Length: 277
Image 1 (cartoon, helix red, strand yellow):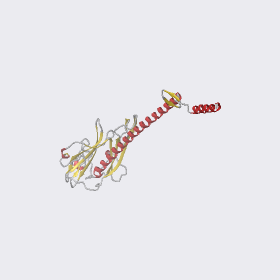
Image 2 (cartoon, helix red, strand yellow; image 1 turned 45 degrees about the horizontal axis):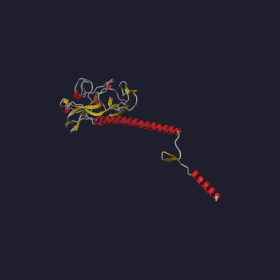
Image 3 (tube, helix red, strand yellow; image 1 turned 90 degrees about the vertical axis):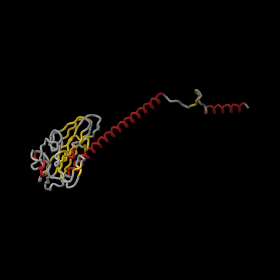
Image 4 (cartoon, one colour; image 1 turned 30 degrees about the vertical axis):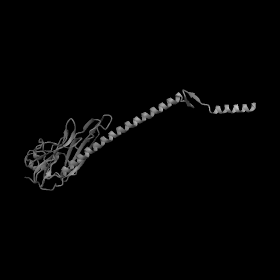
């Protein structure tokens, strides 16, 4: 009987040995966390947080840069579009430029706002004379009447808020601004410089205004724009230099992105005889 009781006692002790638990403040657990493990987990959390912040910051910078470059591309492309659209529709051979003879012969003083002006330091001004047998829209948005002789004038307007490609229109028939409006219509903002050269017959390279020998035979123009991103594209300022056609080099030190956009525009009606009122 004693032996049997001893076996029973030993069995109960063994069972208690394998099912033993610890009780602290009424909660049961098998094992705690050491200080080293806690420090390692904290370090890993900090590293992951830093990586996440850097990744987010890089994405924001990339997004801003991509947006700035997209704006830059749009500004340059739209400027070329407007210049090509209004340039190809020149209704008469001549382009008013230098001289003090008669505007109707395609010549006028370069100091006049409705005449072509060639500048190596600043932006050029291009005046294209037109004549249409039907009503048409001038580049300033006004309507030129049937058989009205007028000029579209392209230049760069700069103020504290923006720089832009603008246009005015002048009526040679009425000898005043077209429909009495001298306002400059903004065609595209984000354009800082505009340069133009001219193609003459039997030449493969364009020349500046001073070398044009016969304005009545100008067959086309080479135009170049310097467009910018309007908003910062870089995190730090940097020096950048650009040269458009025959103009002097222009330097900038800021965070904007810039690019030169250039194209050739041939006048569709270059073989028409000049028509004067």
